[in-house]
Length: 163
Image (cartoon, rainbow, N blue to C red; front, side, top):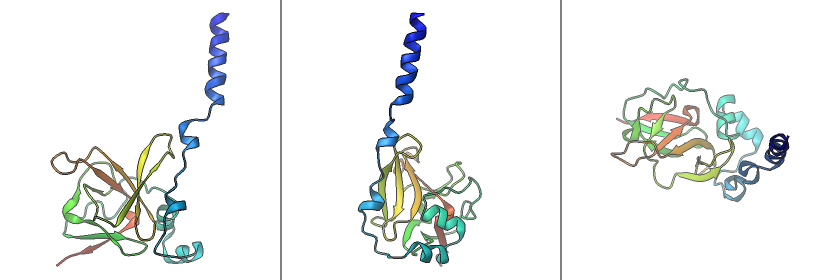
């Protein structure tokens, strides 16, 4: 009987407590000063529905669906919303995750913030110019370079080959 009471109290306590993910807020969008000022309607008119969902609503595309995933030619990956150069092709690598991955961004063009959307701390990446959501950065990238894996939604990017 004692075990049942303790178990019931523990379960009630567990369900009744707010988790860390419910208390933390993503302050990036509130505190940033975007250099691109557009209304929600203007973004919807400019972007495809998938780009809008990812860049403006922090969505995620399905793994292995991006046209940019297997591009091997030299070039620049820019923000699909404002054309800011974000990643160089020489820093792209095959991570096997299903999203374009890079070991580093172009300095100053990507902003970072912490988010708890799935209940754990993750570093979210945004275009530093328009604030568009790009993806997340993890510490399981190539050890011989930065050790970082910038896991980016392909729909948030556009590729421009270099000559």
